[in-house]
Length: 235
Length: 254
Image (cartoon, rainbow over all chains, first blue to last red; front, side, top):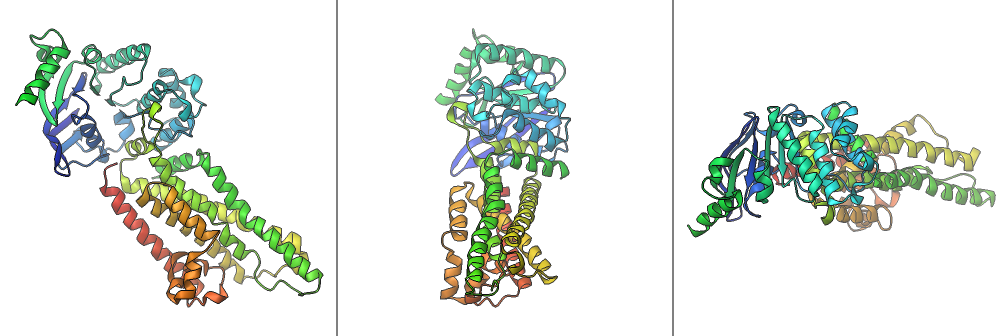
């Protein structure tokens, strides 16, 4: 379970997040939507202890991420690119992560197979395409077979086959009782993947609820999204 | 902590640049020692002098420290190295801190990995340098005694502390260019810190000038420090730098 409570992030005189609160529950895929610059990545980075909150809390299973005893078996996170040094091979990148978490070495081959990157494991990451880099990032997140997945714009750079694979994969994770939180600005793709939705605009949550609640009387999630974000713009 | 150290060693040893560091670390000092040994041998054979008049091998080990400067710098700068735009522009540091979220433990395990690699490189460099001197100069090589053991320990300490100093500076700069340029130039082309001893004796308290006293006495620098105090002064500099680096690193957003 992910719990964000009254989270505020101020940079200079500008509030990136204005006291946002929401939950991502086990057994559900939660979509964290918003236009570019809405504050989605900042919220996720605070959740993982990468950035500091000005006030409020962001907790994983009731504790801050930095206090988790086994972070990699609790949470798998995917941010920009692969998160690997470009002169390292994909396999070497996964190897050091496995060592840091004390996981069995066999997990490296398992996740490489899982994300379809086994053939490129010995290539330097700098020679990967964007799609391959994202797959490596996902492979790293899956090493600990975590109960929670946090993905920042996971479909960026993936080809249609990759997007479809990811959708099925995330649905299966949620079906097995795990928590999935993903940020996105792609409405069509998100609508097919998520159960719950949180819409963020200019650092404020403008709507949250189940997919059905959010779409409501609108024709599509996209229509609902623009209705909610426009409302905030006008006010 | 054991896992974190194993991960940091694995990271360091799987970077291509580490092999440049290893090559510089273990070859520079023996190479300079070989050249100087031949010069000394030539002088002895010409009967200009009868023995080597300085502790050949030790001064050269002061130059080999360039290898561990590279180790200290890349251990941190590689974390901030940005992926190409086509690959999404990410950085390894994000992965590192999700795997090891305690920033203090992260830096401690990284510093331990740097210290371990640097100590091993120092020991290999000492062995190669001494063997080279002994092979070339044979019976003209200076005798080694019990007193030299503390000098060898001094070399290892100097290498480890220099690597940690490079590490500490790079925590603050995040990028390799500045610490690499300043520290490598000061060690190789022109030692600004040594030149400063001509201006003020206080320059003997700068980290490298103090630290090198652990195994060499630079006569014209007129250092007031004993080998032990040289080590203490250098260690104090390094502790201060690492403390500032740690506080800064723990407080900043990535």
